[in-house]
Image (cartoon, rainbow, N blue to C red; front, top):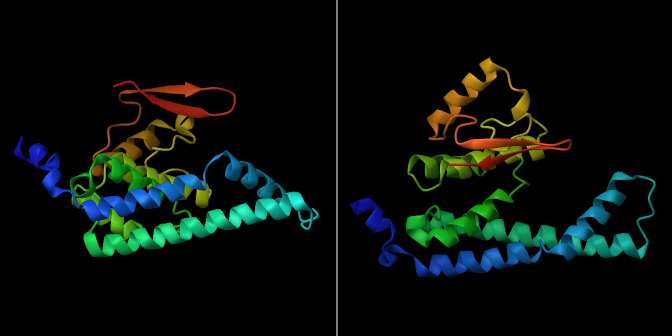
Length: 204
């Protein structure tokens, strides 16, 4: 009870840290609006086609927006990692619930750290100290494995192939999930499948 009260005590919040995270988050989301997502589709369409004409205006404009996106992400993560070195991991106790979520999203977007070699020691320590939620920890790990490396998820927080697991695989995954404080696979969730994808809806 005392610990819950201390987490909700505004006196514990580092207001300066909170404000900087909030400003970083604004930039993170600014380069993820519809204009930039449309540019991303155009950019990668041309990049994947080695024979495409990369001098036409459509690609040049898309490339300009993507360069800005990459630059913003790079500056954001450098700044946030520097802040973590000074202040510690941006936990709910340190920066409040909303700023914790904002900082997590910026860290989640750190896809240039494809094998989590930079971030994993930081989130390992944060998990041990109770500064990052197990779900969020698992999300970062699984995102890098699936999106960046083309591998299977480790914790299956990202449900790629979730519906095709053997009983033995499920048991092994549940052992790893338990180690970081996650519920068993399928516990409290509904698996939603269609022709294109598999998703998980939390029921309780």
